[in-house]
Image (cartoon, rainbow, N blue to C red; front, side, top):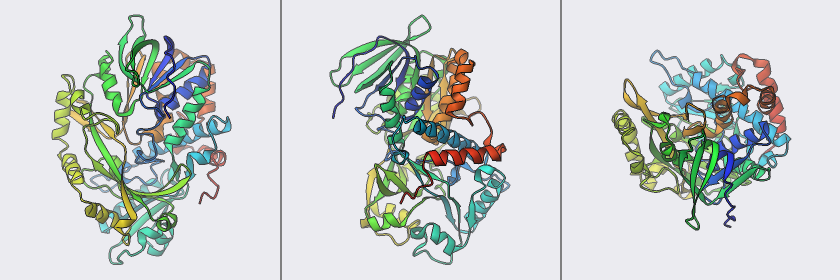
Length: 503
């Protein structure tokens, strides 16, 4: 059903472009620390959280770095670097604290609507991969964040953790797995819509659906004129604001380039699509309860790390495998084929060319993925579920991700596989670029921009006290404080009802 178009509010404190998880999180935080703040949200579709935030489009719902092997690279000397995994795990705990605050205050519905307890498992086979996983496990034991992790090379034990992964598997090849019992599955689409619905009830917040942000220009007074278009009537309008956050997923790069700030220069984007194999066999779906991650193929982007994934989507248990990467010049799943060509300009052409030249394995990988037949995709699936039948699965389109390309003094341009915030020097514009780990670290990312965009307010005791209430662990090192980590995990698990028997 098409939502009614609301009249534009000519003057507002904040404009949020896009109604995804990032804008929903930032809007909620700002309204908590300053109840009197006025906010307008512009969403070009008729529902919040329909692109990268949606459960079917999000490749890693519940990133906590427990099982994602790409977050723990192996060095030349064989040791494993867990620094990125540690940072992501700490950020995920902050997200849990914020979500617990939302539940406690009844800002979002029953937590079972958006989060479920789901063990996180890393699974590998082959001598070298087993050595890697063992080295990873031992490295991660140095941090209390991963102290609950279990390692096994015992086939019977692994079969108890993930029966469909071990059934029919040959016995000659060594296997290994790690398991984190406290893993979760998060439906970021449902969470986003819950926060947006809450914001919609707040005084001073206006949400515009089917309205697209087109441009933003400095107003000469330290603020911004934002130009928008009603996609139903094609009527255009303008509003003025003090601060703009661009959280429009793949559309962010275009809008950032429209902003007349020096910080936008040199940024480009490389779109990567995704495809799932969705299980149709209810018996198979009910036999698996975990997120089982393997090792990515050479050249694969982070969101294409293969996993056999149990998910709760709209109250129904689903089983997915993938994602398989694809290529499209669209920056959004519902975008335009001209998105990529239009994003290339004088300021970012050189970084994009150099990044492309230095990432030929990625290009080859994407070409190979696009050319895959249904039989080849099923063969990839059988590496993880050896006995499965092709007719038990159907192909489903996932979301689009735009990987960040930026200038580099030494390399000319580099392709970044992460989440990046671009903030203007005066703090009046902030934009979120990139993908993985994205949604799972949204709270830390949004809290991190406050001192840059609201420097004076962030130093006030009112804001500091409220922010500590929203996310007590933000800015602290949980990896160095075992007691605090244990306390916050127990508290949020109780509030989020993660101890319930979900299945």
